[in-house]
Amino acid sequence: MKMKYLDQKGFSPILMVLLVGLVFASSMALTKVMKDNSNPSATAGSGGKGNGAPSGPHFNLNIIGVPKAKTTDMTGGGRIFVPLQGKCQINLTESADTSMYVTDANCTDGKGGFQLPNPDPENDGITEYSVWVRARGKPGGSSSTTACGELYDEVTMTTSTYCSVYKTVAVRDKGKGNFADVSRELLYVYVDLTGPEGVPDGVPERYNLFSDALQNYFWDYDNNGLKLLQMRFYQVPSVVE
Image (spheres, one colour):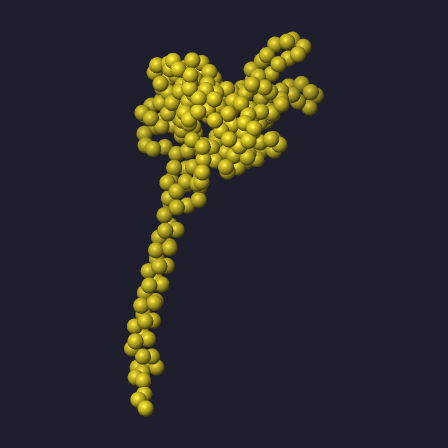
C-alpha cells in the first residue's frame, strides 16, 4: 500500500495550497469590510449621500421662488411657488391620517396651502416625524420661515396672530449644502399665552401644530431671493425642548 506524501509538517501540498488560498480570500474580504465601514457616506444619518439628512423614505416639498406671479390654481405635487422677493402665507391643515398633500401650490398670490399630520399629539416634545431643509439654487439668496397660529378672543371678538419665537433661516451659500433638522421651528409654535397665574408671564410655551391652544396654523414665508428651499419629511422622530 502506497503512503500518501506528506511534507515535513504533516500537510500535503494540495492541502497547503487550499489553506493559503482560504487565508488570502478571508484577508481580502476583511479588508473590504473595513474600507466600507470607514466610508463617511455609509454612516447612519447621512442619507447614504453625505447630505446631512436621515436615510429612508420621505416626502419631498420644494418651495420654489419665482420672479413673476402664477395665474392658475394648482394642487397636488410636491412644490409650492412663492414670490422670489417678499412674503406669503402657507396655510396648514391637519390630515386625517399620515398623508401629506399640497392643497394650494400657488403662494404667489399671497396664500398657499399644505396638509400634514399632527406632529406631536401629546405635545411631549417627541415628534411623530421630522422635517429637514436646505437651501438650493443660485448662491446668494435666503429665506426665513416661521410657524404661526391665530387666537380668537370671545370677549373682545377679535382675532390675534401669534408667531413662534423660533424661525428657520436658510441661506444659499456655494456648494451643495447640507440638510438641517428644523422640526422645532416648523412643527411647533413657541409663544407666551399663559403662565402660573393664568396670564402671560414672558416665558414662551411650546404648542404643537394643530394644538387646540391656537387655530388656523400657517407658515409665514419671507423670501429674499432664494430660488429653492428643499423640505424633506421623514418618519424619524426628533426631540425638542
